[in-house]
Length: 259
Image 1 (cartoon, rainbow, N blue to C red):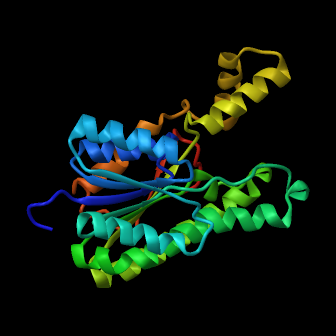
Image 2 (image 1 turned 90 degrees about the horizontal axis):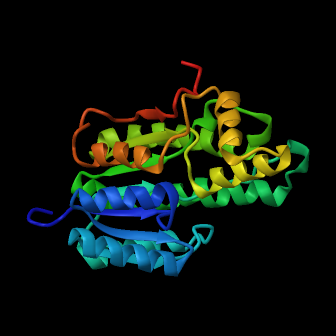
């Protein structure tokens, strides 16, 4: 794709980590197709990034639980920009709670969105990434390495995605496609700030104290910011880590204690 901007597709891009990743990539000179379920938030972000960076930013809204959506997203990116250089699989939240209170539907939903969304998108994108010598970056989660009773679905999905990332990287050696995963620890997204507010209310303390207690309980240095995950994506996307392949990068403030 000589003479053109590189092209990235970012899922879960309307807020939080995905929004920060899309912003970092646009600032790094990428044209973007961003996707999430909320069209209005995507439209606002696309307009903002195009105005700020001068890059072309397209958006498509949809639910990655739909098995047909990945193909239409890749087609939209290729039709708009002529190819694809980077796929960032970021979409997917899973339900927390005690194991015996989680339903069959909760488990099915967790895998349908995050795990199978990433698998299907990677499969459809692969021929284009092979052509461009591109990359897949999976945003996974430190919970896949450190199981907890309250995070059985998320931990299982994340562990599966780690295995998938490693296996796909092995295929990437043959096809010239780099594949890496990033495992965020506790990041100050809307989801985490919501949990902080819940603890604040339940314990009758202010949100600052609630956050401090959570940091201590999770044994991390602090909570991270979405931009700190985006910075790692931008580093990989800019070619700064061309020897990094098949890696699972823990960006978690020390929450992962194992090797």
